[in-house]
Image 1 (cartoon, protein in one colour):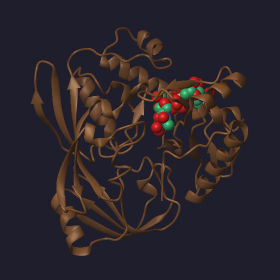
Image 2 (image 1 turned 90 degrees about the vertical axis):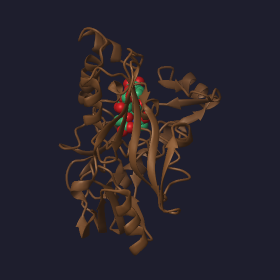
Image 3 (image 1 turned 90 degrees about the horizontal axis):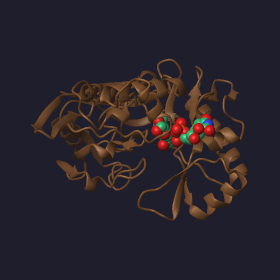
Length: 337
Ligand code: EPU
């Protein structure tokens, strides 16, 4: 059954906590609910909103916000090596990670404590601490609003890349994700290469999924503001991918600059946007109701009462400062509406 709300305030439905309204919200349970919506009232302008952790509303949304509410988790297949699960879009991401870790399964532990819904995870291929959603996703089921049918894409067909997927490209404005399938492994596969992860895990004993989850939660808790306390959408910008020559030139001037190799692209290097912003002196900078977080410069925060426009103005200013100092353009990771 679908539920419809008209002229609704979105402040409780976005982690930035900005107070904008939408013409209509439709909550759906099944693919049939979406089919009915598109058959009966073919909305011209619509947007799928999951838990609202990666969307910034900057004005009245004169369209239909479509939100999944089904969240069942089903084990599809089990073997000595793996467990395959199908999880509906509205399931909380971190509850899924906790479920996997409690069973001693491997693959999701590094992705602990990311504020997200399951349906949003493949869209921007959420990632942290050397892991990405694409490493555990086997398939994505979605409703195709042009062909009016349910389709299923394999991992390869999702064209996953750093914070990218087919759902942000060819299928943008066309697909509504219904469920995601994951393969979790029984054999140990600790992934401890990123930053302080190994140190934090060793302080807790063996590299088990539970200890890795605890370690990651501790690291995140120290750096990233809890959106329930301070409005934010995690990293506001993507880490920029630049030509290797650009990175080499910057490294001559800033030898301590962090950078990462880009798998499958030897000519490019990924820079740390948080470091670039930090170097401009903006970390902890506040302008009225918005600011740059004081422990992770990649996160913009709403101290209370900010509008989406206030956040955008701050984001523009941050981009200008980074470009002026390093000649590097930042682009937002957050969806701006
Ligand atoms: N850094 C600074 N100052 C800062 C922030 C970072 O100098 O204020 C430096 C760090 O010292 C480190 C480097 O920049 O050398 C990278 O920082 P960090 O490890 O904190 O990660 P990040 O690249 O800033 C990315 C993801 C995060 C994810 C972390 C950990 C993106 C856009 N962000 O951030 O994801 O949690 O790695 O894996 O890729 C998110 O997407 O919302 C998110 C929080």
